[in-house]
Image 1 (cartoon, rainbow, N blue to C red):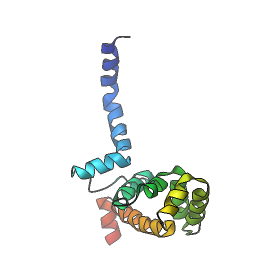
Image 2 (image 1 turned 45 degrees about the horizontal axis):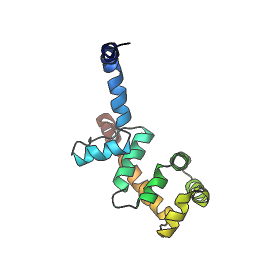
Image 3 (image 1 turned 60 degrees about the vertical axis):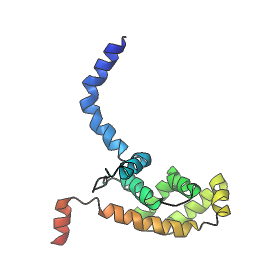
Image 4 (image 1 turned 120 degrees about the horizontal axis):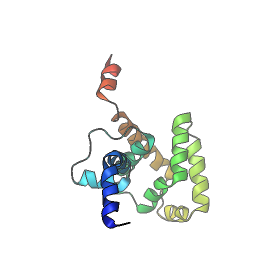
Length: 146
């Protein structure tokens, strides 16, 4: 197969794939940071869980130590956060975080920095709620007013 045929195939499918790629990129922490740095950040963040979580992590993460941000990026922690959020049960996340920090090397790094994970997650939760509120469409804002 020639390079020309590969390029032709990519160009042919680009209109169908580009929106999906853009949608996925909007949920990536690095892309969000770059957009914000370039003042291209959208007024309304994506309205799915991973998008809201990523935007909240970018807003929360300013001046936070890297080990703490690594903790928030862990899939197990994100899953526990979402389970707690859905269940409206504040006992889920602290237990999961404690268990994770007991066996993961991040636990030593976070303890060395004297970070209180519970306090950090409370701060993150507030930011998550704020970002989630910004995902409302104009129609939802109007409906909420009525």
